[in-house]
Image (cartoon, rainbow, N blue to C red; front, side, top):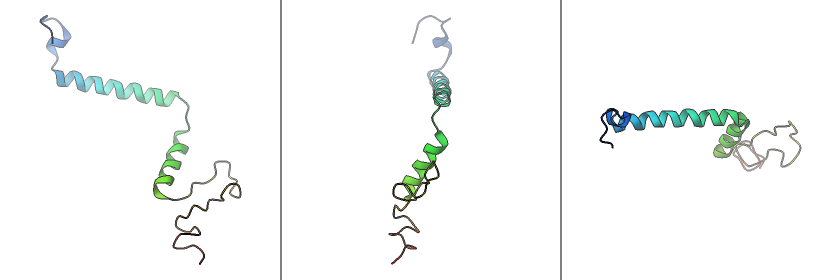
Length: 84
């Protein structure tokens, strides 16, 4: 630390400094994420769908394009409710 008794580092315990620093970094990171303009709701939905194995809907609403949402999850052709 420092030998100067008037220094803020000398009066603040290290754990308190680290807690304050961590809080400030979290606030800065949250502000950056909000300002970047990414579609966080859509990204989170796609991430959860990928983790659960459920097909995510087409964001443009065109269900016939691409694979048609048949990824093999429940209700898909390979799932337990799919055709035999």
